[in-house]
Image 1 (cartoon, rainbow, N blue to C red):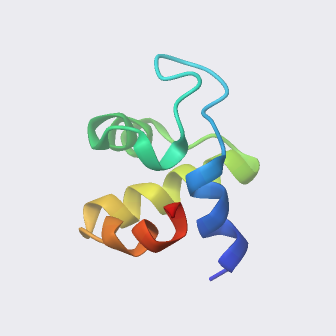
Image 2: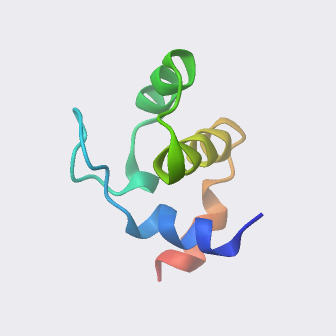
Amino acid sequence: MDPQLLLELIKMKMPFGKYKGWIISSLPESYLVWFHSQGFPPGRLGSLLATMYEIKLNGLEYLLQPLKK
């Protein structure tokens, strides 16, 4: 896994949609589940959303806490 990816999850904001401006790691799980069913967007944003989906799905959000400090 790319360590930079985890840093981007806590810094990058959602560029569009209902949660525009929200930090990727703060997106609600239901929104990530919707993307999972509809298909993640291409590119880096899709990778970030898919990673955050897996983190939330598996209850691993605690891994991001040290990075947020």
